[in-house]
Amino acid sequence: QQPVQSPQAVILREGEDAVINCSSSKALYSVHWYRQKHGEAPVFLMILLKGGEQKGHEKISASFNEKKQQSSLYLTASQLSYSGTYFCGTEIGGGSQGNLIFGKGTKLSVKP
Amino acid sequence: EAQVTQNPRYLITVTGKKLTVTCSQNMNHEYMSWYRQDPGLGLRQIYYSMNVEVTDKGDVPEGYKVSRKEKRNFPLILESPSPNQTSLYFCASSPAGRVRAQYFGPGTRLTVL
Image (cartoon, rainbow over all chains, first blue to last red; front, side):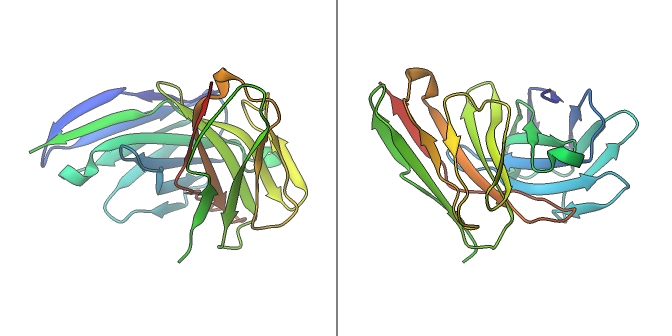
């Protein structure tokens, strides 16, 4: 089942902060975060694993609440380059390793 | 340069004419996937493969076939394309292990008339 992302869209001024949420109805092995700029492929930002391990972008942080199957992506002191659509992807793991289900995306626009 | 390549990048075809979109990666990744992206629906996984000769259905496999005969290649086959398969298609690869970050190809825009 597709994870639910919120908000659907957000507009920021440079320097402002934003939080993007991702919620699943299933127990998760991992949560991925990707950013896609217009006309380009999605680019990996971060992965959060069951058990607390995280790997990803130095300037972006995220959290993963395993009990609630929720993840949040924190974008602080936003820059113009942060604009794009952010997708979370959820992986249940086990026998479904490799089956990644993405949310519908959150469109972030950063204005000067 | 580590990359995932897809060909063709753009394709316009007609209903029922079989086509293949190729995908190749040079990172020696075990996992490969195909996604389609449609406005408002996000990325939806079509098929994925955990290794050579091991494939499984994603969320929207109907009307598609895949094969994984070599580790680096994962072609997507549309045996009889229909207009509802008009979409933007992405191939992705990821390593095995716990951190399965996906690396996406540039995308193939397919139009079926």
